[in-house]
Structure formats: C-alpha cells, structure tokens
Length: 313
Length: 280
Image (cartoon, rainbow over all chains, first blue to last red; front, side, top):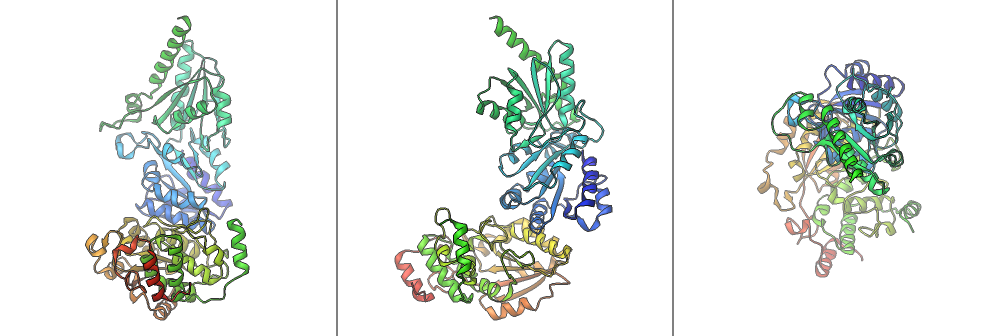
C-alpha cells in the first residue's frame, strides 16, 4: 500500500501545488517517486515526529495540504497531542500516513506494532480515519479523500502485491464494501488483514457456513447507516482486525449495534494481550494472537455450533 | 449577542489607543480581577514584549490577510496580555474583552482557535515553535516576505519537542523566524534554576545554529530596534533571550511564585491598581 500511496500522491501533486510530503526519516525505497519529482515539496524532518506534525500544522494554516509519513506507531502515538492540538483543533487538512498497521513489522518487535492507532484516533470527532484493505483500495481512497476538509489519518500496510478478491479497489467515503455475499454469518474486516478474513470465509463455505464479507475502510466518522444496514441482516458478526480488541473495528460495530438496538452478537477477532516479547513473522503473530485465518474459521464454526445448540435446546 | 456579532461590532468601533505596556498591564489587572483568574504574573512578564510586537513590529493589515506576519503565543497562559493588545489594536471591543473567561467566550485563559487574530491556539507548552517553523517554511516556499514570531516561556524549554523545532529551523536557515524567550526565571512550582538548570542559555541556542541575542525584555525601544534590524531573508533564525521580571509592574507580585496561579483578593486588586494606574 505504501508504494500505491507514493505513486498516487505523486500523480496528485502534479495537479495540486498544495501537496507537501514530510517524513520522519522513513520511507526509503518507497517515497522516492515523490521526492525525486518534487524536491521542493518534500522534506525529511529527521527523527522528530512531534515537530513533523507541528510543522505540518503551520504549513496547512498557510494553505498547503501536508502529508506526514512514518510507521503507524511513530506517526500517531508519539505525536498524538500535536495531532489533537494542531490539525484537529485548528481543523486543518493535515494527512497523517502510518505504515505497518497491526503486527506487520513482526520481527522488529513490540515497539513497531500499531495495535491501538485506530482506537485512539477515532475518538477525535474531527479526524477522518481511513484504513484501506489493499493497494488498489489505497489508491482509490487517496484519490477520493486527499482534498477533503480537516485532518485525515490513513492506516496503510506495507504490502503492494496482494489484492482483496472482489474488492477491485472500490472505496466510497462513509461506506463499507461488501465483497462476498452469504447468509449465515457476517465477517467484517479492517485493513491489511482482510485477505485472511476472505480466505477464512471461503474455508467456511466449504464447511457449510455461508458468510458475507464486509470491508470496513472508512472508520471515522462512523459509517453508522451503512454498517447498520449490513448488521441488521445477521445474528452474528465476526470483527477481524490486527488491532487491540478495544477501540477498533469490533468496538465500532458494537457501538452501532447498541445504538441501533440490533439483534446481532459481536465476536472480536482482535489482539487481546500485551506483546510478551516473543517476536516473529506476521503470520506467526496472527496465529499467536488468535487472528489467523484458522482462528477466524474456528471462531466462526464454534459460534455456529453454539447457535444451533441453542436453537435445539 | 453572540460572539461573532460582538466581534464585528468591535471592529467597527475600533479603539484608537496605542498598544502601550502601561495599557496592557492595566487591562491584565482589570480583567484578571473581573474574571477571578490567575496567571497574572506570567502575563505581566510579557506585557512589554507584546506591546513591542503589536505596537511596532508585526505587519498585520488585517487579521485575515494571508500575507500578514504570524504570531504564536507558545506560552499560551499569558493570553490575557494578547487580548489586551487585540483590544488596543481595535480588533476586539471593550464588550468582547469583558467576556474574558465567561461562559461561551472565545477569550479563555489560553488562546483559542476561532478568535480572529489568534493564528495558532496554544496552551500545551512545547508545541508553538513547531507551528511557527511550519509557518515560516510555508512563507519561504510561497515567496512571501511575511515573518513569524513565537513567544516562549523559559520553563517551556524543558519540553524536548522545542529542541526538535530549534534544530529544524537552524538546519533550514529559517531567517524569517524570530523566537523570543520570556526569561523570567520562574515556573509554576518554583524557580527554573532549581527545577531544570538552563544556564548558558544563549550559548545553547547559538550552538544549535541560531542568531541569539540577550536583551532587557522590558525595554520596548530596544526590543523594537533589535527585531527590526534582523535579516529575515537570509541566514539563521533569530532568538531573543528577553530578560524579564515575573509579575513586572506590580511590586508585590514581582518574582513571587504565588502569582503564577493565584487570583487577586479585593485588597490585592486595590494595591495592584494603584501601581499600574488603572482608572477602574
């Protein structure tokens, strides 16, 4: 997604002189297309993410649309108060771009994971939060939102090859995208873990469980009406996310269900424990944290069995 | 009357008073008593700096002119001094000034976004210089001669993020950026030398690549002359270590930690009025 981001932003910058790109010394082998083409609108601010967001605030007040780029945790948690007191309070079009949501930086360890970014950012009413599911959707999301009013957070993955089947790059702000239709269960997914969610749905199909798969990329403001429309059709939704269980997609869906009084159980396939120091690949960490394809399948089957047992009782 | 209509009325009845340090101090005393709030000593400390900037330095044809100079009150807790300047410039009426700290007022203890004239809302120390750096960078990229002024407190330099901005500004030679440090030696809970020693502060800024100056922060003509002599086109960013007295102008507040937070009693107010010459 970061490659798609850099390419798309370069194209947009050809049309708009307002676009500026700042990095906190990250993006080697990713941001060069932009840096080479627009050296006067690209600055490596150094390893100083708070200052980066502060500078972006000053640039935006003067009419620019600055994108600030770093790894998810460094782009969001380190400068969180700058984001709040800068672009959010001033309602300025700063774009926070975080790469490596979830446990994508696996072997780099806990310091590099992004497991609470969506949770802490979507509590800001004035901050748009977008988490594309693949590189094609990253491009569409960027093209459709880059010049919106107010600040935006883009949670991106590193991968630029895998595509989500059936998504075809679709993105509408304030909408979720249904990529598979089924009748027994709804699987909702956020971000780069979505191919796993889709694969789990296909496995479940072969096991006789018919699943719909919903890609939720537009997270704040909450696309309540659209989510409610989908959730109203199901008794169970599995929320799949490489994020802590609190604050992310599962929480978002729970809020919609509660507010609209929908009769739908939420099963949060999310990270529930603090990293214990054992690192590994993303696949290893998905399995360890119960968010792998198999874990999704197991949770779905277990819930289906429980529902059938309850119906018989 | 809502705030926006009050503001329009204020512009229409623009006061002709000059932005003098005396008037700034009188307003600080009057309004802090009327509202029953503290931060009086911090506001008095910068009264002369604010008067120098708004009376003689800042080029602001209108508060909405994109080419106006920008000012960031990074030590946001001195906002009352800023509101006094806005009033004396004729940007806010007496009626608006009298809403300071009222329910629904745009004039809070710290400057809020939304009050015309406030370029950047502040209150969390350590953020204003970064805003100013971005603003100065934008001016340069846009080929504008506008300048950016940031007023920091001395204790604010405890914040690490300030030094991120200091390094960036020097590296990019933001000559159009002027930082002023209100060097009064006090912070909320004690004297700065006892909290975090910041001795040899001028050398610190110089070693980071800034054009650093020491000056009496209560001498308006000298402040104005120094700032107006800066090369704001080429070279290093500028910093003035403005040596000030906390609570300046009210003898019983000067250098007293108490007056960081305390509001005035009626007796305090009578004594303070006598010293600053307020007519109320």
